[in-house]
Length: 385
Image (tube, rainbow, N blue to C red):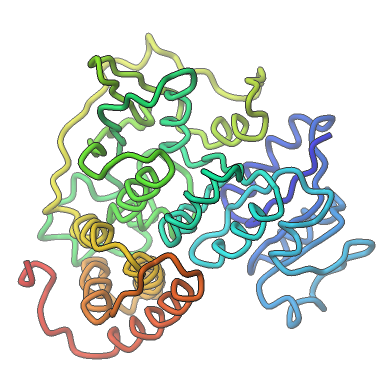
């Protein structure tokens, strides 16, 4: 049996990973579970799977709220690096995923990465570790699609084509976007996901992070990564090769499919519980160019990507703060991009190849974003460009 640890077990990806584990009870043994703030759900998972280790946010403070039994409390890094763990599913949202990802890879664990912020913040570090033999498998639907398209292929990539649904407001008049509510923004048209990634999908920050992730994960130059809008979310991404041939990975919008692919890699395993794609019933599939003027977060993120260094750590932290402020009703939806830009404008970058520099930039950006949110806005993001 393969020993797995799930970091972010109470989130959307974590819960769906456990769905797959339930479907294959003789294939996997849950060694460690790390939730975050949903202690009641974490308790249910502990009672069901009886892992050796458990973790949550502010473990020392929240330990009293959990009935651990024979399960030992542990840090995220201890869960990820335990000797009985073969594979770590990294599904923690935001920057807390970074250190346990790197420590798990250093400990020789295979990391199934759903938390794109790790690769975005520390792309050069993680890419070098992979080149030196560390094992990293993509779980996010779009990087997984690219990975699957590349199986059995040479590296003669002409183009990576990432698809984007366009999020909750893809058809909303731009002039109305300042008035949208968090409740509206959380209604993704095709996917069921956690709050942070759903808002990032509405701003298209999530797609920019996937561009950055693909740059480092697949070694593709920026100019060879393209984003197209695909409202149906059936084609999860495509790869064009040097001869002009294009391969695409299709499937229903269900994260359990890429999760299962990573858990069983390099084998494919039949699973009758997963919905099959009804090709004849699809009708027409639509694609159209990305209008970046509708999604200022995408442009802000790509500017940071090309600048490199610790700008990307600052980007992730500032976006995390901005999304939380929007969900709390403290800034407008259209204020997310402007707040992130204001933080990046004040950032003095490091080279991005020192873990300490990355973590310091992340902490600085969090503080600065909160300070900037409390200050008057000097210009709109539209006026700045």
